[in-house]
Each structure stands twice: as structure tokens, then as C-alpha cells.
Image (cartoon, rainbow, N blue to C red; front, side, top):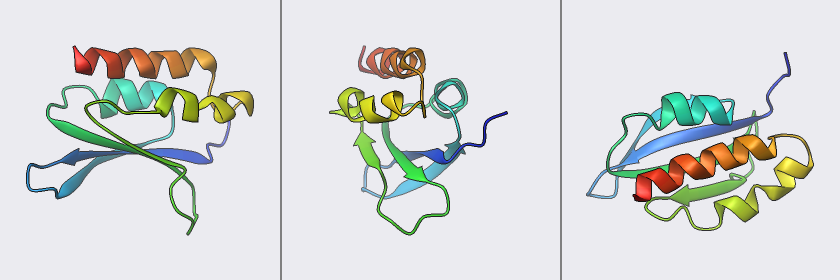
Amino acid sequence: MMFRKLYWVVEHVHQDGTSSVRGVYTSIPDLVDCGLAGVTGAVRLTLTKLDSNQPPIGLWGSPSFEGIHDELQPYVDADDFSDDHRHYLMSALTARLG
């Protein structure tokens, strides 16, 4: 099993602007199947490195999750994520816009 160095944080964003962490996931399938399943309302996704004091790699919010597809390309190129998994995530996010 591959050691994951990138983590997804899923937050539910409340109407007053505060947020609560829904979970932390190590793979796109877990992010989609567990982290986004059944979540309604505003959501923020953060991609971050493990044990890092640096800013997050990426931060995307609903409803548009603007730029996420292109911003994940370098991580597909580096084999951190497969292109199939990136497309799986994009399908799940597009379904949320439905």
C-alpha cells in the first residue's frame, strides 16, 4: 500500500461563515464516497501535505469549486492522483451543481 502524503479536508460551511470539519481523507475515492456523500449545503475542500506548516496546496469551495480540475493536473502528472480519480471527483462535484 502506498503511503499517502496528500490529504483532503472536507468542511461544511455554515451560513454565518463558520465551518466545521466533516473529515480528512487520503484518496479521492474516499473523499467522494465518504466525505461528500450526503453532504448538503456549502462545502470547502482543502488539499494539504501531511505534517506541513505551509499553506494548503489548494482550497476550493462550492458551488463552483473553480479551478480544481486544472490545479490538480500537476498532481496527476506526479502520480499523486490518477486521471481517472480526478475525473471521478469532477463528476461528483458536477453532480452537486445539478
